[in-house]
Length: 578
Image (cartoon, rainbow, N blue to C red):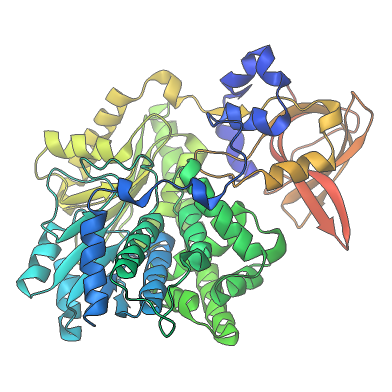
């Protein structure tokens, strides 16, 4: 979230947890965990705390099919997805199945040619490879036609996915998905790469029971690929429930120690991140976007190859390609975002109020960047947003982003149920979804979508609130606190990085890098001066030395020329008290 987007907030307030005085007496890290609904005693993440593999419905069937394919030397083809979760899932399965002695290759759909998931177009594209078994990762739960076509061609199909299931399930040989009806796996927010990791663990166990492993074919350590699991989980923005935090924490530890894929090291290098000090946000905002850029603008294949290669020089070359694609993506995004915000601004002025949702269309918008633009508009106006463009087939392709309180996929389901034939296809999560519809249905869809959103969101949900972790005591506003918080993660979706609020006297300020503001502020309680920075700030705004600024900020461990200091990363500035 950028500083400039925070103009949408109407309220700044501590989380409900802090309204109880006794809760504020807990040690800091326990306080932060409890405020997020987590057990304050579970601040350590050991792998033996992971949920059991056999909690997954269908996993034993899938493991038996895959283990048999490995021992019988059948041709296994991984069918992935074109985002980071899909790329990491694909790389994980290829590496692990090869290490188990299987014959495996992969295919990742081109979003502009094949559409999403195991579509009939994908099946037709892989027939010449003559696979015996298709294993989907991060997709497949909605691929009824694709699965049916694959089976008519004699292919067995194992689906591993985490997206919400529709009214019907594909007639696959096995389905592993925590969100399919009847699955007892309690961590429903597991990413596609996490589901694949569990399936591989079950496959390894099945092979071990068959006596498959030996001195010549040693049993692989699946923990060696937790760097991929961490990357895919964080980049897919799934809620970091406890089980996900265990996986991500273990993966981050491996990356920090250098025990990771050469491709991840290379991506951190081209993005200017320090590997030994990696945090989850580096995966979310530095590594993830570079991989995603390939899937948005071309195809994710170069990203998968970057994750698969064992050669550091090759990894760096591929990471450089991904970095260039990401720069191109940023330019496209900037133009589309500005255009979208102009459309919204004109609409708000015309209606003299802000609608409950936005459905924006331009035939020339780049299909691969629609989701990012929807996210930017959502951040600016705190409204559910769907952006659409015209695809090569002539249909309209759309991507949506939601706000707390509206399950976007369920809202689309209601629109489709009440208006049969209006939407051709849709799918997704609570906070993000995609859809396809005929161009002649655009206006009707826009009207019906806004109606459904209005029926589901009350006035309170439309009021943007910035929740904080309250005010730090003067003695807590020190470097060790920032270090404790950094090590206390991983922080991310559903388990947000701590934000604090407080009032400070302005000592000095200056513009850095043309669009950032560097401050020096004084804590009036202790008299201590602190460095602070606001990225992407309104540099035209005037500030007077000595005035009180009311800040929402994160604590940052700033290292410069070998010196480590505390820095406040400002998320919001007000001249009025909260």
